[in-house]
Length: 221
Image 1 (cartoon, rainbow, N blue to C red):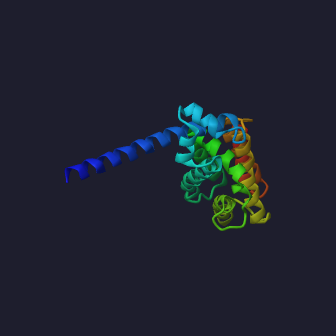
Image 2 (image 1 turned 120 degrees about the vertical axis):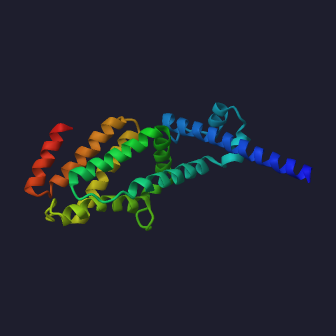
Image 3 (image 1 turned 60 degrees about the horizontal axis):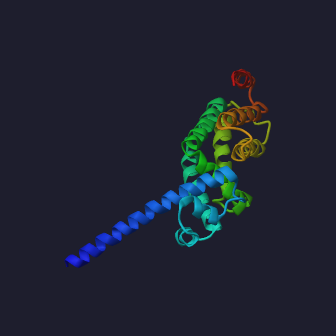
């Protein structure tokens, strides 16, 4: 019985070490993609940076596309937590809460999120707008969480079709995200850009009182 226990213990140790090595290399991949872009990222460069052989990378991850798929899967899981926030009826509060939550999440793992979005771009994740669980549909649900309560509570007048306003709020975030991912703006600028754009979108359909409050908020950003 003793040899069996020793063997089992040894196998557990090997698996644990393999997991740690894989996590270390995956973190290096995130850093390289975030710095150079997904197109310039190569398996051979990852192997050199990690101090392992190219076959080792293939054994642990597969191909470059497999690393992209893994990045996207981790990205979607992370975003689902933010996407489940409780609806807030006040447009200013909902926009501020949403943008602040997203930025706080990105700041914690900036290399990961930038590299994951680059990978998502290349794998066509953003192009899928039909399936129920697509990134686009989930993002639209977030915007709906912002629009519908605001309409119900009278902050918005309903003069603009809610589907149009919802799409515009989504675009506010999409454009800001792309600018940040590809290095045109930093996270602080991303925060202000998206918040301003969302408030401007709300202002097009806001009640007079809410419109004034939005105008005051824009002056303070």
